[in-house]
Image 1 (cartoon, rainbow, N blue to C red):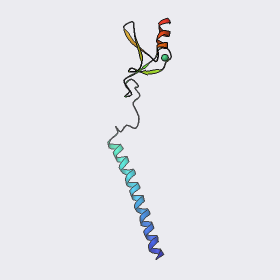
Image 2: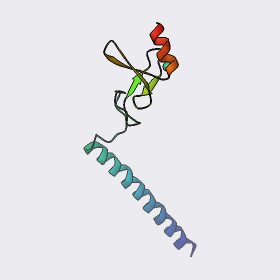
Image 3: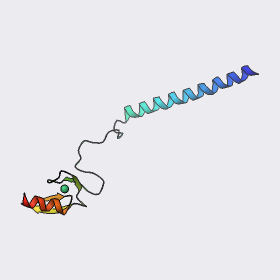
Image 4: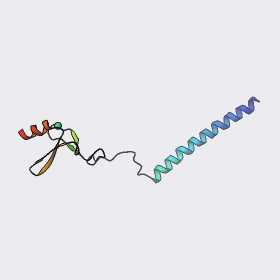
Length: 93
Ligand SMILES: [Zn+2]
């Protein structure tokens, strides 16, 4: 009676182990054949999805979204600031 139970337990453990191994192997195969799975984000921070592009505030160095930034055209170039305070500081400098 106990031997039967023991066999049943071994079977359950074996099935769990095989399923685990199968999952690991299939994941490895899918990574080999499909290397474009986004495990690492691209290094270019120029185009973020969070509300437009990110531009650096030249006064305080903070990255601000082009949708929420304070904009000012200086020498024909659109400059983005995190706040009107930074924009005013840039005008003085
Ligand atoms: Zn700023």
